[in-house]
Each structure stands twice: as structure tokens, then as C-alpha cells.
Length: 317
Ligand SMILES: NC(=O)c1ccc[n+]([C@@H]2O[C@H](COP(=O)([O-])OP(=O)(O)OC[C@H]3O[C@@H](n4cnc5c(N)ncnc54)[C@H](O)[C@@H]3O)[C@@H](O)[C@H]2O)c1
Image (cartoon, rainbow, N blue to C red; front, side, top):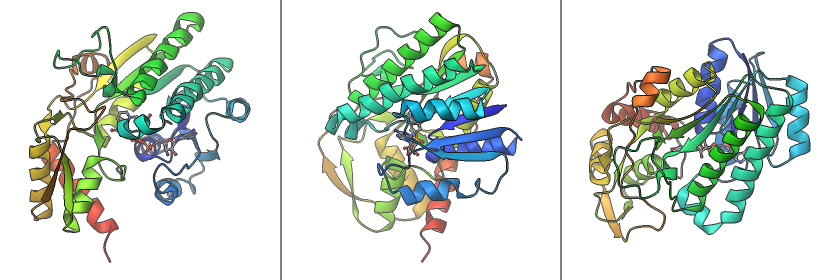
């Protein structure tokens, strides 16, 4: 395959590139290295691929249609994994216009460019957040109507709808993958696994929002990559598929796992519940099992141990 991976310098993007290049595919990464978090981290994420003759990096903002179109015409990818986005629920409430521009406008540009050169398959990174405050658990892909409760979640649902348009109108094969809270080495510094590990290890108090009973279906990044790579290899018309762990844990349990792995007690600062946060995410993964043979392998305790080892080795003085 010749695969364009957007967001290739990000957390999930860099793990995806590693797997694809490792399997001998030709990969073109697109990323704008914006400062949502420190761009130096993103540069480090891609550094190891730059020497590989099967990897090319294009620094480009997906909102720039002209440049995106040129890149697609230059490389003529057979497959696309579209991961570039402004991620994060809470910051989207502060700047909904930016989230809309990148996640909806940018996604439309990538879809249009992919359609122009008639790619064989397109994989779109959607999110569990589209389920909003859904009370039917575990969340099934057939859930309807979906009522997102943050601008971020609304942009992801809009992205799925645009994908459907390209499938319906042009017959493009598109799979929308709804990721459930992804964690692991190179994890995003704005997300709880990193933030809590960093804060607890420095002996500072962590901000605990709500009473600690909210639940998240944390999914290890290599399991997610397995799902992405299986999807990209299997054009299926149009599908929406959950990629989660199918085993949600409470915030209190999550904090205990980190304390145990770090061998350090957390100092807790209690905070009220946050706007845009949902009380539970819980993936039904039967469809992923059936269509992709998806089976998450890494348990939370094990995954956090690997993550914390990575964190400690990175922060060695
Ligand atoms: N990490 C999770 O738990 C999670 C959960 C659900 C969905 N997702 C989705 O998965 C995808 C990857 O997430 P991640 O956690 O790796 O985030 P990330 O922020 O680490 O990666 C996103 C990458 O996209 C790039 N990017 C952002 N805007 C861009 C633009 N305008 N032009 C070009 N590049 C741009 C960023 O620089 C970054 O490198 C995103 O679409 C995100 O919404 C992530």
C-alpha cells in the first residue's frame, strides 16, 4: 500500500506510521506541527522515520486545500488514514470555531483530495465522544440519535457524515473508527494518563473532577493501531466501528493503578464535574470483532505499567 497518514506526528499517528512502515508499506505523513502541545514532542515522534526511504513527511495544514491537493496528486496514495484533528473535549469549548475549521473543513479537504485520485480505502478517526450522554451501555454503533455534548464531539460526528456523503455519492470506501480514550507511550500530555502520572510523580496534587465514579474505557494504543491497520487493509463500503477495550474503569480505580505503578500516593484536589464530560464511555466491540477480528490484548494495569516505564525513562535526569 501507499498510505497517506494525516496527523502522522501525533500520538496515534506516529504509532500507526511505525506499524505501516514496519510492514513495508510506503507512507506519506502530513502534519502541521501546531502548538496544541509542544511541537518538539511531535518532531521527536517522527524523527525515527525520517531516515526510512519508505517514509516521506509533508508539513502542511489540512485546511490548505491547494497544498493538500498537490500532495495527493504528487504521491497518488492508494489508501488514506485520516487522523489529523484538533483533539480534546475541554479545549473545544474554549475555541469551537478552530475545532470546526480543522476537524470539519480539514476533513472535507482530505476527503475531496482522496476522491480526486480515487483512493481504494479511507479510514477516518472518529471518537467515542459522539455518543454524548448516551445511557444505553455498552455503546453500540447503531445507537440513534447521537447527541454530542461538546464542539469536539459534534465535529467528529460531522466528519462521519461527510465520509458517508463521499461513500454514497462517489462509492468511496470509508471506515469511521470511533476510538475510546487511547493511552500508551508517546501519549498526549493533555490527557489524564500523562497528566496524572506527571503530577503524581512530581508530588503535586492532581485535580480530580467529580467524585471519581465517572468511567472511561481506556484502550491501549497498540490495540488501536491493530484496528486501524486491519481497517485500512479491508475496504468495506461504508462502516462505523467502535475501537475500545470493552472494560471501563472508574477514575478512582485509574488513580490507584497509577499510584501502584509509580509506588507513590496521589495528593488529590477535588474539583466539580467538568462541562462537556460524560459519565461513562463503554465500547461494544462485537462489530469490530466480527469485521476486523479486533481483540484488545492489553489490560489497563499492564498498559499503564508500560506507559509509566516510558514516562520515567523520558524524564530521567
Ligand atoms: N487519543 C485519544 O484518546 C482519541 C480518542 C478518540 C479520537 N481520537 C482522534 O484520533 C486522532 C489522533 O489523536 P491523537 O490523540 O493522536 O492526537 P494528537 O494531537 O497527538 O495528533 C493529532 C495530530 O494532528 C496534527 N494536526 C492537527 N491539526 C492539524 C492541521 N490543521 N493540519 C495538519 N495536521 C494537524 C497535530 O499536529 C497532531 O500531530 C484525532 O483525530 C483524534 O480526534 C483520539
